[in-house]
Image (cartoon, rainbow, N blue to C red; front, side):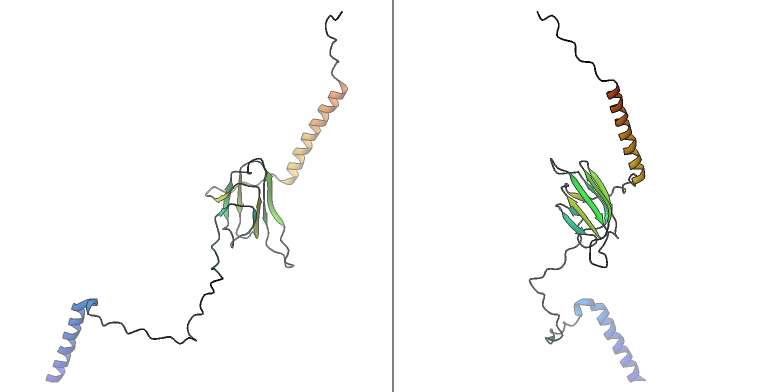
Length: 182
């Protein structure tokens, strides 16, 4: 029993010494073990850079892949560049034939713009616009339905035609001759 007690006491004292010493008494790390060349990761090719993260700013004309080139979200632009027109399109992803998908939404304007680029859009194309910036604005409301827009144009053209007909029915009178030329 005396031997059993002394082993237990020795183990307890050794454990207490390690706990009291803390991390400072830790053994030094083993020297680095060389890894065989077949197990090492292949060296990075200096000619290939890691793919860039999608941007939240579009500062030049081009077609951008959603999720790869740009982040989805609500973007705002100050409108066209000086003396120009801002044009943008949201485009569906590639078709099975590899062609660009259909146009989902578009604008051709001289006004500031806000557009929601959705995560399931394929591409966003911009031409002649000031910088697009991801914003925290709410998405724009739905545009005018094409049928309503067509009816508004018809009403506008009918009004112009009616005014033109009235003008033809009552042409302006000629100006009176100048007064008193001898």
